[in-house]
Length: 248
Image (cartoon, rainbow, N blue to C red):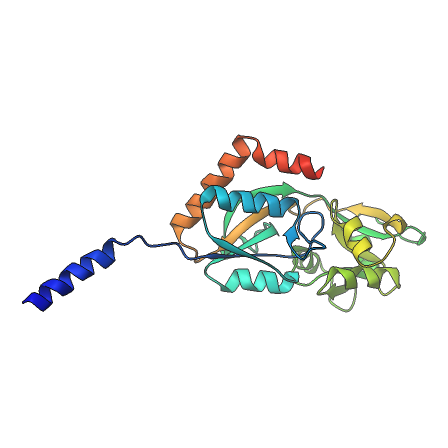
């Protein structure tokens, strides 16, 4: 009788102990100046500042890791405790994640080298006569394939941004799909000269809003805490203050 009573009391005590939330794995790619590996090896950048502020505001324990985009995206799809940023939201991705909220807005472009005077693009179909480079598993890859571009015909996919720009500069491709903020930094990182780039076409119908998103199996309580925390840091000006600090 005593043993049964003791077991019951211990069970009640254990049940009453606080349950700590599982540490979140936060994954991102190297995308200066939004997120970048700094000289000291730490991960920094405007979106990193926003996301770390968000997680601190939500009082959620986390571990931040940076990988190439394809691996980042794969982790976010497969690990229940994963968050991902900065990710473009699209119809094809909608059901795969909990969308915590928008953290930045971009414009998307097709760019080429200034000294290539033969490039003439008035609409996206015009670009199909050229070799276009993009990043694997990026929304741009999906977008271009949906618009009729074919891999190794007029679409060439790289796993890293350095390779994307090297292919453009060495003539393997004629155009690269990029956005309004990150391309000068990516080109410098590749050891190339960004002043040689010309913008040839603005993509009119692709999502340009960057989000932080969570694996679809992350528990609803944590998702709710993150959404409310993002609302607070936007409404009180802390989100905008970070963008102002980084001048983006």
